[in-house]
Image (tube, rainbow, N blue to C red; front, side):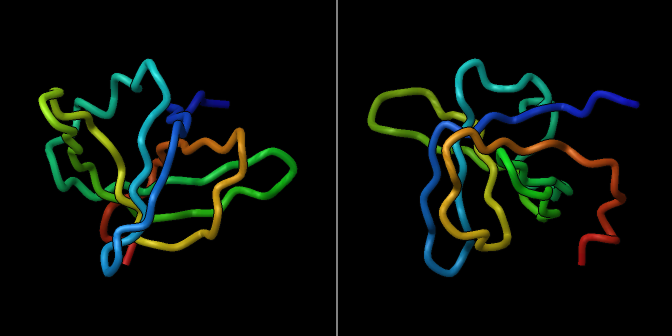
Length: 99
C-alpha cells in the first residue's frame, strides 16, 4: 500500500462564506509548498476512531503581523469541530472528479 502524504492539523477556524481554514502542525508538510496557491486538492480527513471523509480543498497562505506567510488549506466543506488528533491525507483523485 502506498504511503499518502500527511498533514497534521495544528488548528482550524471557519471563514464565513469560504470554508474551514486549517493550519499545519510543525513541521509543515513539504508537499504543501509544492503546489501553487489556490490549487484544488482532494483530501481525506481522518480522526481517531472514525472513518475517513473525502473533502476538496485549496492551498492558501495565512500571514500574521510581521511574520512570513504560512501555507494552509481551505476546506470547501464544514466537517464540524475537528477532534484532537485529526489529520488530512492527500488523495490521488483527479481534480475534475472533485465537483
